[in-house]
Image (tube, rainbow, N blue to C red):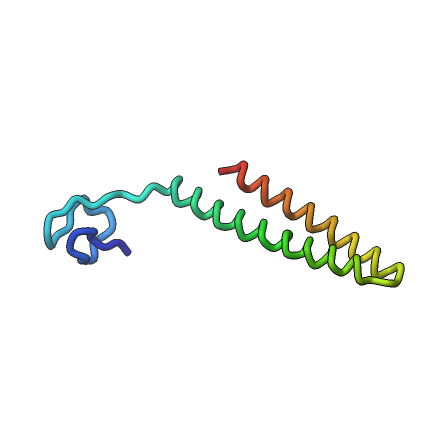
Length: 93
């Protein structure tokens, strides 16, 4: 649903002018919208691995058992993997 930028009246899909005030209606660019969506997804998917990386490093320093350290190292590795995937999402833009 689109609205007129000038008067706020709802504009029917496909119309070039607002029926209320005659203001020209801008067409949305689907490619631009796709780029915005990819950007938001990439930012979100890059924040999660960074937080996981910090938690993994702190946990690695505090862990005492062998398996605790192994699991923390696996978590840190996965964080790097997901972070690189997120950076690949930025490259797609």
